[in-house]
Image (cartoon, rainbow, N blue to C red; front, side, top):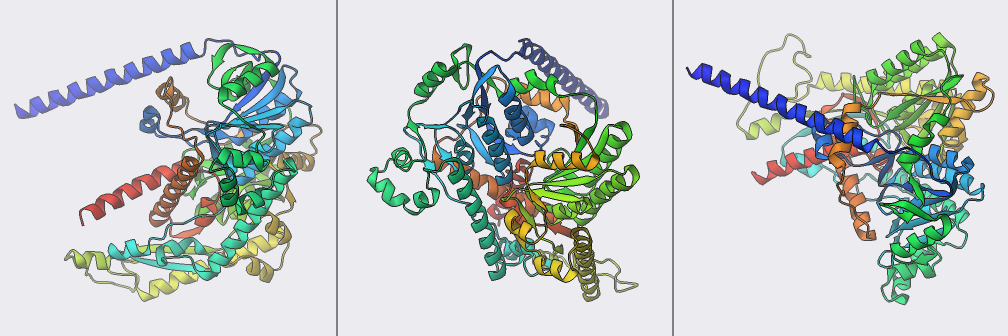
Length: 630
């Protein structure tokens, strides 16, 4: 009788779940139908409003159904969409001006910010004005705002420029408390990715290399700001901030105004009124104001038909986020996922005449990196396609490995690249088990039986084999770079050793060929393929799930996400995201493949990475729960 009752409860539970699922699907479809009713037109004489509510990335990540339904995945805006909208608006007679609404902008990788800034500079050549608005500006937002003709700011806001850099997490003491041994095998004086497991602080070599990197990135930022806004002095403003704040009686907004960093201090209503004078009043007030404007997503939807659907094309392959073995969702570079996408695209589309591999990754699995490179090499040999690499904010270690299939490499001066090095990492838990009163014992037929033995400690013979394997992969890596970049192996070893370089230094060291964004790489690929005029672009990537997109839209409809607008809260939010992303990287490293070509410190200074942050949040929660019961 008990069995029957249990079976009945299970059946009722399944029935209730299916009914709930059908109701959710019904409301999602209803919401999609209602929200898509309006005509997607572009008002005459309007302003294109780049309402950047979230983080700027190369490829938006894919949330799980639970995260999508909860609406907590975070907003990600793809840089390619922003640039396409700006380029289209420059020649669109219906667009009279451009508005940068940066009030909820949460940042982006420096190279992507540079590419968007380049597009804004081209837009200004059309003679159409650009106005920027935000309650407050930090580095990333100001990098874009500096391109505007007029910068507006809330009286209670301010400009806080900090420059690249910050703190990293080091887990040595935590691992000691857990009695976990981290066994590291590496090649490279500067391969700092393993240091968070083995040290309580950065090594002198890594600190020196990182300092050179952030100094170069800061110089690029200052140069771009000065070029766009000659009267601004970011270096002087930062150096004299306490004195300027004192002269302004603690008013951060006034200090920014008197320093020439902004043009107007006014409430948003005044900014709205000024935009109404410029482009007129909207028929319906929007979140950004009452002026005659069209938002980014609406403009992209309305102008999507302008992209040609036939003709010779350049295929753009996206390698974004941690490089992992097997399949992976968007925002993470699954080796098998990307290799299959390349093969399918070339099999199904004869219009693709060249490939651009767009990299925004600090690397990861050696095997997955090589799987992607081999897929690109097959495209080159089997289809006789030229390949050009385009480096985004980060293209280091495994990300640089992937690019060794390319005939030519483009990067921005602020790109973080290099980190030519390899390591293996394996935890062992023999001390943890001893503390719990558990012993590990057994017999072996050879020295390698049961190895790597994470329960009783890794054997000496296995350690030798692992170190030899790491050294062999490093030799392969440096030889591959030497062949592709036409450099002596000794020179590659000198600039390798795991050291990270800025785009400026990488060009000097011949690790890249030219400066430029994705558009420059596409143009170079078209030239190599003999394509005349502007080619169409086919994105080669995992398609986003329509169901998840609808679920995210439904969950977020009518809701205001938590937004940070004051400058100090923005800095704290960015720091929190970096911390969570770093924790997520370490979680992936600890349980990921043994052989890795990864650059954790690179990724930390690159694009905001919500997938890694979500993993890091889970790791820190588990660690907190563990220590709370110790």
